Length: 122
Image 1: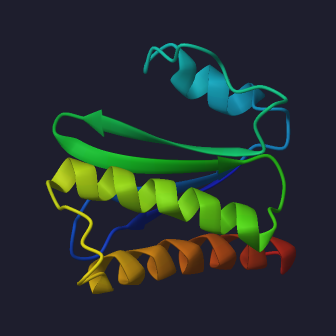
Image 2: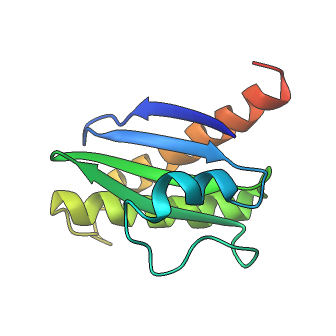
């Protein structure tokens, strides 16, 4: 399992990116019981997002079992932005969506860097 933690700009909290190529064995072992998931991650899941708040500190976690296509990264970024905005009480605004666009791009860039670093042996 590979994992990277990045501080989220503006909104605070941690963004955690996880690569678990062992069919979610590691992710389920760490999070399933503590967060009381209704079902463990399994073969139906290519990727997924969840939040983990401990002692009032927010963590937003995205998990992949292999290098995803850009469409999968984008899909998960939408979930990440929606969770972040919901937690911060910020409403999505189709007339003024700059904050949403910024955070979507930021999450995407972090995930892309994570996988590029793995491929480059960093």
